[in-house]
Length: 85
Image (cartoon, rainbow, N blue to C red; front, side, top):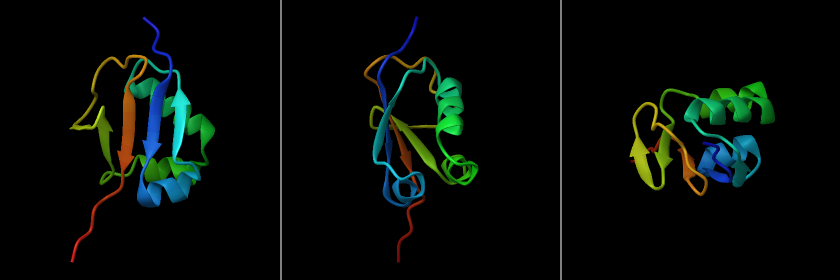
């Protein structure tokens, strides 16, 4: 099954690093999505997206590890680390 139109959002400092707020990618899995991001962005930007402290949300729910199959219309968000004071 082929996913079409998975929305990918980048928040705060990650948005600054990649230079866009949102893109649409055809991907059926997180691995396929990451491959697409690696091809689209600079190595430095990709490194920021894959940093250990970056969180990923699928349809506004944080996920740990691989969320499984992506469907057309899903929304993936990359969230930078939150700092507080």
